[in-house]
Length: 296
Image (cartoon, rainbow, N blue to C red; front, side, top):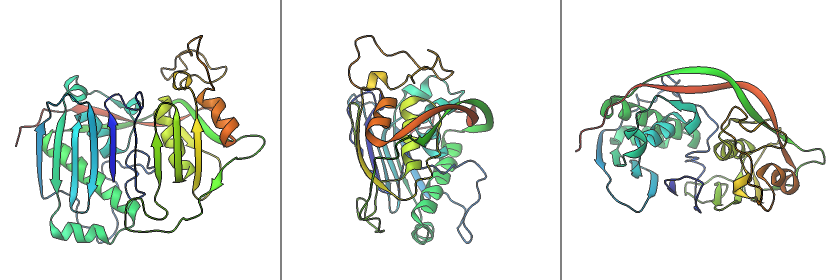
């Protein structure tokens, strides 16, 4: 899995290529501390890891899940926390300023036994294990301690619009070991455009949640994977029709001169889907303590 993006994620044009084994930021599964592990899987932990400050000025962020480990360049501690616990920015609180501003390069490797055990897992199980391993690394090197809570907050439900979906079922949904191979989710994102192939509705819901800064729950009941293209005006993505300006989620009103459809309108007109405002439980992650890592 390789993911590249600018530091202001989704605000500038970016290109993302994600294998289904990665689903790096889009996986709908929830990974928390003390998460159940597949039977016969050893306690997940990287064998060795290097963490160094990144003083580059190119604003690029890269994450790569390799067969023998995990590497990242230009990432913040907060970004690593979001990835490790599979949460979005708005679900994390309590981080000090440096955890969002300081950048690091991470290179972590597994031992042979762990690598062999992960090879026997499904892609989803393998990603769960990698996240748990990153949680352990954060606890060891950043002295990270977290607690969890759930709040009743405004959310969106992704549902099928009145006239039905306008989606094309992905023709090839077979598996394969290679990123970008048959059945592997791929997408390009940039400037209010998404071109996706082999994407599930739960993946789409998670992506929309990151765009909108609010949890989106898949209630479409659409199974399988789909190919589609979606175009919208980014400046208008955060405000639902008829929603209050704050919306309880940091929403802002679209600028008066905005042109083109909002994300809400584009979803309905182009994909036959709709976002409905609701309230529901949202898992939150509280950072109780964290320290800057010693360089090695």
